[in-house]
Image (cartoon, rainbow, N blue to C red; front, side, top):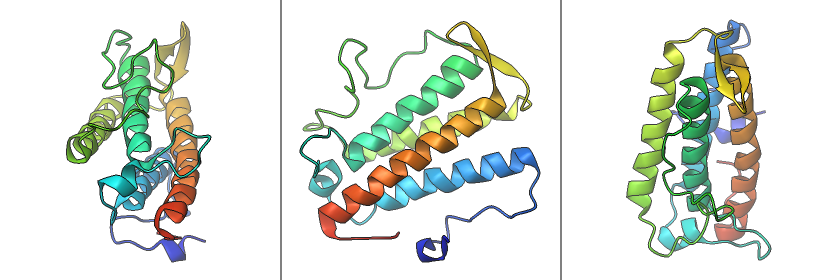
Length: 172
C-alpha cells in the first residue's frame, strides 16, 4: 500500500508493535510524509494555493501542523493553556494559513520540526492513559496520539492534491 511512497526517512510501522510503539510510529510516518510532500519545490510552489476556494498551501499546512502540535502536546497534555500561538491570531480564522507573502520557509519549517520534537519529549514523560486537559475535560495521551495521526493523515491527503496541482507530482 505504501510501497509507492518509499523514502529512507519514512517507515511503515511493523504489524506486531505494541500499542504505544504503533501510535508513535504512525505519527512519525505522517510527520515525515508532510515533510516529503514539501520537498523539491521553491517558495512559490510551497505557497501556492491551487484550489481557488481554499486557503490551503503546503507551507500553510506546515505552519498549521506546528500550531496543532503545540495545541495538543503543550496546551492539552502538559496543561499549559496559556502557551502562546506561533502564527495564529485567535481573532482571525486560519491565520496560520494565510497570508504567507513574507513567510520564511526555512524558519517556519524549523519551527514545525521544533514543535514535533517538543511533542516527542512531552509525550515521553506520560503513559497512554495519563491525561492532560482539553476544554475542561480529561484527555489521555492515547486520544492525543490517535487525533494527531488523524489530523496529519487528513492534511497529507490535502498535501497530495495540492502537490499534484502545483507540479504534477503524485505519490511521494
